[in-house]
Length: 477
Image 1 (cartoon, one colour):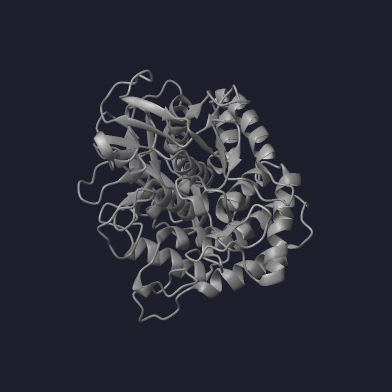
Image 2 (image 1 turned 90 degrees about the vertical axis):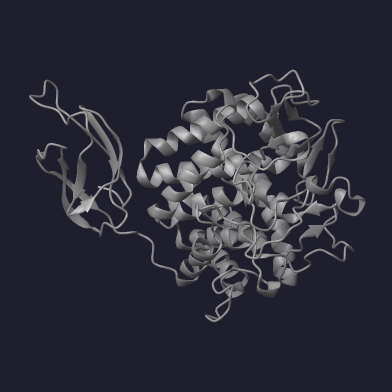
């Protein structure tokens, strides 16, 4: 049994009198053709058709010479989650309005011609959005979208030599995005997003391709994106990026490929994914996991916030994306601090995560908001060009942290509190005007007819957590 999209493997008994033949035939379930992943005379790998309706029926193999196998029972299960119209509208907005013809998710609904050095805006495709869409489509049990996203990542984003995920796909070339001197880069937080999406897909569908791809990226990250040159952490920490020139063989001692070690974003290491990798075939992550947990504990301020960046000189500072901007470099970016707290909560390290939740709860309960930036002492900044009222993805992280702590009995609030955050700051931010070009998207702002995919997709994770999706709320303690 399983959901539509469930992977199935059909093998012959020992000493069979015949086989499936070398030429592919078909696999059918109640009149539906099941897509075949691989076919050999003795073993077939396929998955239950996406359109299969929940009920019990039988799987049969029809060989190329029209032989029909005996039937095998297979029950397609009903989605256990109650449909959420807010989540459905948001998901439809991204999948129907923000993807290109290959299935890549645009950063913005409206294109722009000035890609930012910090981020790829407009109609470029990033690993962030593809990883988020993997995760959300797994939570929603939309196998069609999940499989389309998997194929895009596998064919267009994973580097065949280094086995890591390119930061972006250029809207013009449809190839990995390159910066100065023809270099391309990954962003390890986003590699981990993709890994987490494959973990979720494997949990939902049992498809070995998803597990194998998660492990492949995990090994690639370990090889390329861990720096051991940092004071106090000799076993290595996940760092900012790895840079390489396409097609160059692995050689970490020259300028053709290098690991950036100047800054370590504290929130880049997804501890849940790291632990899964450790226990599913890449135990070499264990010392990095231990060092990372030590780093995160050290990064926490007395008030509960987490510093965002660890530097080569052994000190911590603020927003890692804007270290060259004096007014932001020493400020705490709330989304980054919340990420760190959430990483810890999702592996059962609840004391520091709960302390962070208490800090943000004081802000939220006291003023009804969590600003984009805060001072290290917890007070509001004087920055004029930031989001003083927060944004959907901040509240999605806050709500998910809430759910993770409640699930472990480590929260001073109950699940209803978490639900209220989702309703008031995520669901209420949805564009419900069916005549609008952004109908269904999630944003606290009008956005002038534009939309940012990360806002809506992070909001979808918060909505899925409210539904109780196990692949979003699960803790790997």
